[in-house]
Amino acid sequence: MYWPDQLADQGLEACKNEDLISMNISENMLKWLMRLYPPMLFQRIWVTKVHKAFRGIDVKINKSLFTTNLGNSIFGGTIFTATDPFYALLFGQIFRNKGLKITVWLKSAGIQYIKPGRTDLYYTILITEEMIAEAEQTLSKEGKFIKSYPIEIYDRAGVLCASAENEIYIRNLNFERNPSD
Image 1: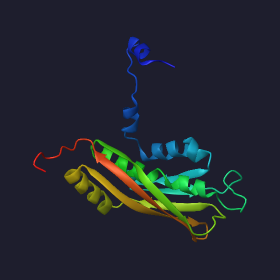
Image 2: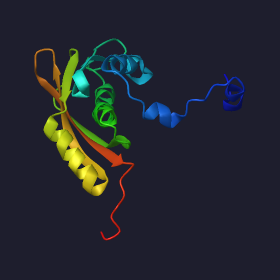
Image 3: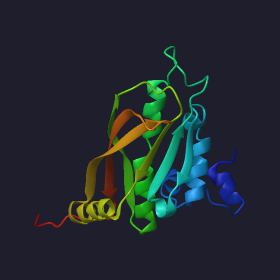
Image 4: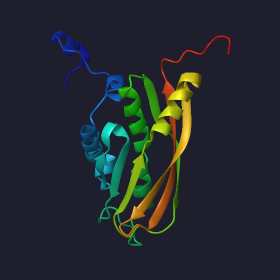
């Protein structure tokens, strides 16, 4: 491991955490980063596709020995974990690709388990132009955007097994409030 001063001695620059957080990546890179990210990998949560321009994502939750509970269904925690990062990641990449300097994170989440997940589970998130426009408008006027979005998780037969809500928080880091406000 090299320390920043050792890198400077070699004419190199250390990568800062904020550089990693704000970096633009490709759809394919995001797919593979999430596939290999330990909380996803070890719970058999598999990103099958990141849609063009980060406008959506398809996720599969694999039922396996490691994700099956005593009731022969997928652990609720695994299902909840699978819903955690994706709205924030997609919105973050969309706005960074537009050149906005933002911070984005999952502010809160909730889930309702409707039926046991006895097969692999699937869900898709889609980010529409209307969702993007609403966020952009609010960010330009107020400097922050907070909104909840649904995720519906289905089994292999198309039966709804869980319904989640993710509340995302986006802050425009370049926003300056008008002193007259």
